[in-house]
Length: 621
Ligand code: IDC
Image 1 (cartoon, rainbow, N blue to C red):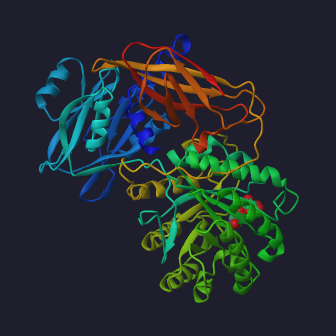
Image 2 (tube, helix red, strand yellow):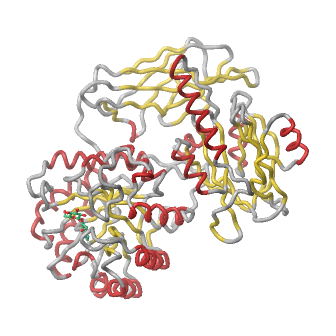
Image 3 (tube, rainbow, N blue to C red):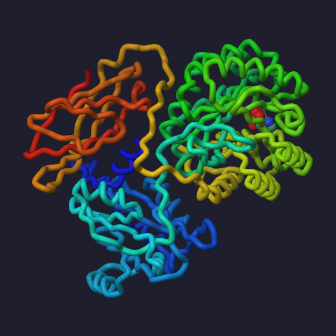
């Protein structure tokens, strides 16, 4: 799946739109480019560094113009992402010194160009390009080449630069022109990992399937009973793309007003969890299902409900790699023996269904007593972690010492909730104490989840009171701004993803909900979005759109496109696409198999080649 998305994003699209939509798009584009030009610094672009010997060059893609863009400036990156550019990971690592690479901007086409050649620079300037100073340096040792390709079919941003020979070759096979080596990197780039790997626990650490260490940073929803509206695609996208989140925690209150065990609509709350799990997957976020006990300090109070709930969740998500279970948010007023008794019963239920999923166990005193748990941990299971919660304005050395003791004893700890407010979620913020905590978590490589995605009028809310959905960076409260800054600084330490040649195994089963008849009103469209010639064949890129204007979800759809001539599939993404004769069959992936009422799927693409120009008609089965 990752492979397809990666290739897709690199591909030039010239949308054939007509009338106002096209003009609107042009206007937006123009605005984007003007603003990106305004942003440009007058000195060499300043760099955000991961370590003193490397400069990370951020790579972005504009799906409207198909331009690829590269910058060392984190603010510029952030700004462009907020305008809708897709973040594609680290293009390459540049040296601090070397041969200058000049950056130029064409104010007419809205295109950037980068070159080592002074001559080319001066030539372009004489043709009206704007010289934007040195973008970065090329490594003198010439060990890691940046390959350059040119897309003869794209208007803007026709060049792509990559350290991946494989990416270069894939593009060339699709009709791009190989233009050789443009400059040299210090180290190869790291594309955005489009997949989530199953996690497991080893010692104090969380590891992925390739035994690479994972330190998650993420955010908790507010109580699902209080603010269900934050389980929203745009919020998840915001968390992923602008708040540097890798995980979302779904806080299912049990006892509080409207909670799962206190009169809340259980079916609705479960549906929210399903939605959250699906949206998380769609946005490459891990997701934690949090049984949020709080005023019911003793987890045994709702033992039976918890058993029924987790047996349902584990049945549903046993093969879903990105789900973690948190079985009791904050036990309080009980001892560790009681929590252990509860945990043994719930873990037994989860393990009977899901032998490997990571389970987070709360500790007494609102999940502070990890030192107590460390002296007497649960026995006989794998993939268990213990939670520590802190609110930095209240909890300082005392609780830090508990963590230090637990870590020294080898206890795997996961900070599934924290904030920089007081423990009541309000009061004044203490970012300095927060910074010190983060330093400790970094030292120990401990995952952390911030409280909370809410616009409530309280200090711990990430958004300002009255702010809406979708959130924007200007809606961040002081607490939200602190998180954004802290998480951004760590975003560079993402585990290194697999290379392109290791496609994901699809989940063998995703959440299964009872089958329902699909909407009869669903509309399907296949639109040619680009076409070009190469080696005597015509290549055409099509986008498949399915809209469900009905009032019930459309489930397990499949679509067929019948062509009036011979075709060959060259590439596809976001669906399984197979050909039989002149018919293409599209079947969904787990995450787009269900199209909610009023929703649509519009990211599916295929490139076919043919010896002559062909036409297609499409229908849903
Ligand atoms: C708080 C909310 C607050 C709400 C309260 C009770 O911020 O608006 O009134 O829950 O529903 C925790 C809990 C978490 C708390 C948070 C702040 O896990 O539910 O949220 N907190 O008090 N532990 C320590 C602090």
